[in-house]
Amino acid sequence: MGARVPVESDREPIYKQLTDILAKLISSEYSVGDRFLTERQVSERYGISRTTVNKALSNLVVDGLLEFRKGVGTFVQRRKLNVDLKRLVSFTAKASAAGFSPSTVVRSFRATRVDGLELLPPAAVIALLDVDEGTELYETERVRSVDGRVVIYERRALLADRCPGLTASDVGGSLYTVLSERFAIKIDGVAQRIRARNIETDAAEILGCAPGTAVLELTGVGHADGGKPLWYEQTYYHGDAYEFVNQVRATGDDTQSSLESASTRGGGGEYAWYSW
Image (tube, rainbow, N blue to C red; front, side, top):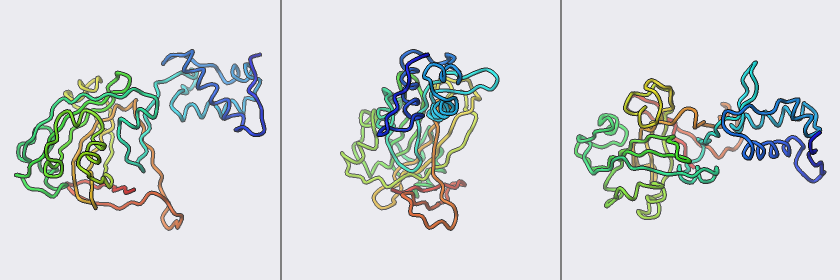
């Protein structure tokens, strides 16, 4: 029988202690795709009831470290980045906090007008940013990676008069940081629409997946300085690298929540505008 999980009255419940122990075991002794210990094996190894073991293993599944395959077993899977829709956090900060090594490649950056956009639909930009065809903006194209693996492909149109002199090197890291620190812009939030779609060939090649693969597409409008539109973005998330979480409040519930929502329409789509 293996080492037992210490039981101390002033510590967390046993299943939480076991969850931490198994997470460390996975990171130190297992690789992605490896078959993990069975519920019975864990129970015998640590001298813990199978009910408690089940709770710990379930936690690891929720955390994205393990995957249950019915009739086959439990396997180690690649950790996913968790996107909390209630908070606007930069990719760089989020990935770093999760223990990943983030990096960004700027595929293209140019100053243009709305009628000169090459990567994004001018009609959507006009409608959602409330501008005309001659409005000057920056069109950016970025690829975001964690631990050397591409997980995000992003296209963005940013109003030039709000951040004059922006350069390609400025968008090589956290854009939110540059906007807030260099241009003193107070970002309010993002109106977002998320859907699953089959990715086209060009974008699939960039993400490193087969054409037609299902990915998560996020289209959104960034608002700043009192709700003024600042950018329009179209972003593809690798489906097996990301998961989105949200908290929904029942209609008529008077419970206070940090999440306030409103809705706005434009360009034929409905968006939820989350403010902080």
